[in-house]
Length: 230
Image 1: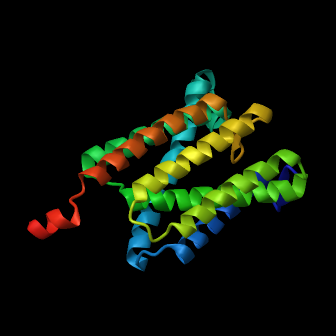
Image 2: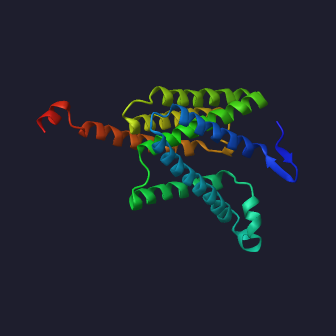
Image 3: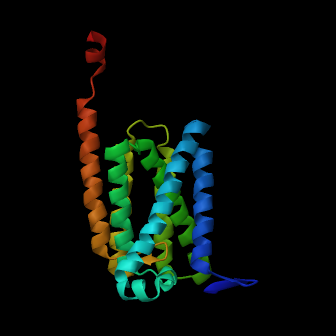
């Protein structure tokens, strides 16, 4: 597979083109299989689009932090500087900070937003890895194709279940464990960003925390008898 495509005066990196195609497929799959009304789906996609913009800006900030010397002498060169794993980690941390801030300040973001985000993310990652597996024919990619295919199938199968947080946290845990196992034999990636095993271990801990919150919510729900008494 070529590393870039030339379209007239433009040179487009293959990884970025695949990323765009993968996310478009992810949005289409979400629209087809989501049980929510059209208006709700649009609201979730608007929020996810906002997060993608924040993530891109966070990548630029991460590049500036990593290449602070160039930031003052040649600021525009920082934008085109390739993002390595540490730039990616900085961007993820800033993105999580933004999500927490919006949740506490404006109460933005809910379980359906998380579910929609996982739908699009897992589908996009599945398409991305599948294309790379077909193009490169490397054995390691088949594990990621299977992993993300399983996650997408689980989301579709569990669409109508009410325990959205419990499902989401479980799938994040499966994704984390799968990538940890993959990372023992190959270099784990999230799209074209290389990741370390500890990165997925952190997400495994986060998923465990989310699962405990979901479990506590289920235990605190009133039973049918209690609702009848009320």
